[in-house]
Length: 474
Ligand code: BG6
Image: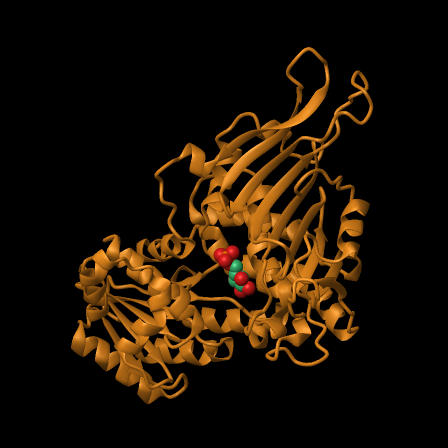
């Protein structure tokens, strides 16, 4: 039968992610009338809260215009809040009764696990036992946020547990980078353009660099961050996902499993990283700009060796991934550097390598660096760009937020942009040995001052050794 309603239950409703991402996303989808008409939202956490508290916590992130206030009221009228523990069956029984009494037993249920990772297993067990919709034709889906474990073993424990409770097609492991416009564009750019496919191989490509930079440090989020570090925070997931899309073969179709099959093949080719394949850094105070060092953050344990910057070389072409906090700017891009041409008919040193750049953020763009004759009487070669900057080419287009797209995907049951169990396992297999070696040998990260462009100088040296030639704004 057709469901009479949808209920979205947010576990961890009092948390940071809920107020900054989940509630704003639900509001935008509601405002834009993208949700099924009879959708209700239930927040759940251990804190003693009301819907008004949820509203005021999320307010700074909702971007609601004055003209939207009536709608905003309607949105929050659809919200409720249930206080409860993450481990007591009776609390989950009460939550279920609340849903049945207030909405309907016949509702599809979307459970968003935005709790601390230590609670995943207990929440999943209890909600499976007491809160799932049981009638035929209704669905129960689970959104899980990273961290999915801390290494191969802990992630396997979690994966096994989840798969004993839910089937793979009910589990949506969110990696919000897969919801970004430019990341979704990779498949179209690669497979809908004749000009790229013959060049998309190691004979023509010298290296691929995926870069993630942020111009802020931990700023009070040190408690979480220090336990994980930059490799687990963004590299093993966001950057590796982008890389898989760049490196994979053409999928058989755009079906979720066909795409994920190809991504898994890329990962399976990668050998596990050792200490020689990574360089790590940690930011220190820069007296010139008055910015604090990582260890100055009171939420960071004294003497921590957690990396806030890392660069790693993955198998093949080479593929380089690098990520850093407290650098000069916020930026994420993919840079594909082509090999040198035989340029001996032109003055030596005049010709630079071609590069294809996909700028994921900010200011989405695809541009290709190429050589051209400097216009005019002379005959000099000059580097220039074919430039597709989105906000110039696609004026008045509003790009949806990554979370908006991904939540809609879950509601329609599309797993294209979610991480499958085997993908996750392979990603951990690649990074775990390097992570364990860094930690067991207590490898000291190279210092870099807050606000520099490229992390510690050892990072540039490492890339140079891999054959990267630096030109312009890399
Ligand atoms: C999160 C990381 O997954 O991604 C954060 O935990 C990081 O440390 C964030 O700041 C970056 O996301 P975005 O969409 O702002 O680039």
